Image 1 (cartoon, rainbow, N blue to C red):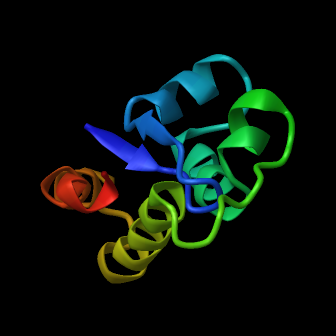
Image 2 (cartoon, rainbow, N blue to C red; image 1 turned 180 degrees about the vertical axis):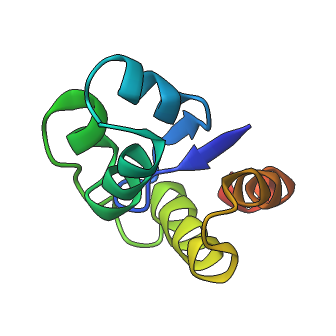
Length: 92
């Protein structure tokens, strides 16, 4: 299941946060989560900031829906990923 970057809307597997720790990009899973949702996937995985997508496009919708689910579900990344999977029809 995927989660989306709240900055650029890029999809990432939930397990990629564990990979970021293994690669030394974060000290632990919680740190990876905070970087991913706070600064964006580019900061965590590519050592560069993410760019905001075009307003109204599918990437912006993915980013906004993920941010809203993060506000509602908090630390439940599996729940967020499950809800995003069910809402995938909105992103096409």
